[in-house]
Amino acid sequence: MKENSDSSQGEIILYHSSENQTSLEVRLEDETVWLTQVQIAELFGTKRPVITKHLINNYKSGELIENSTCSILEHMGISGVQKYQTQYYDLDAILSVG
Image 1 (cartoon, rainbow, N blue to C red):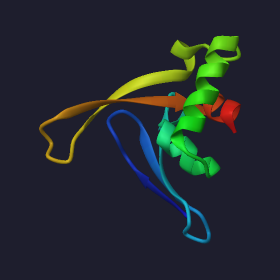
Image 2 (image 1 turned 90 degrees about the vertical axis):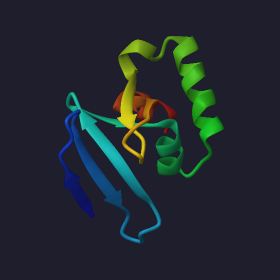
Image 3 (image 1 turned 135 degrees about the horizontal axis):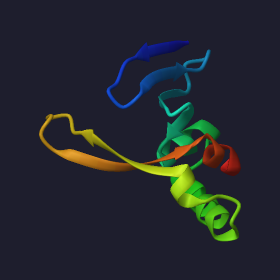
Image 4 (image 1 turned 180 degrees about the horizontal axis):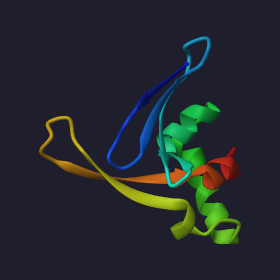
């Protein structure tokens, strides 16, 4: 099931598996999907350190170019006062660790 929501920085899609075991908030921007390392780990049913290791290896080997596949996005905290910066990875990076 998908739920859509507009955002000033792109479209947000909420994904729920048919068994409701997996739920992801997916950012769509610049015609690609963007996920955090935590979201990628959840998608593939593993832990974040595994994703970090694969991404580092893919960047070191030259399989991926970090500044092309990784973006730091700002978002507001729950209180609406504090801003946070979070690294998001595009579909190429997501598929490279999958």
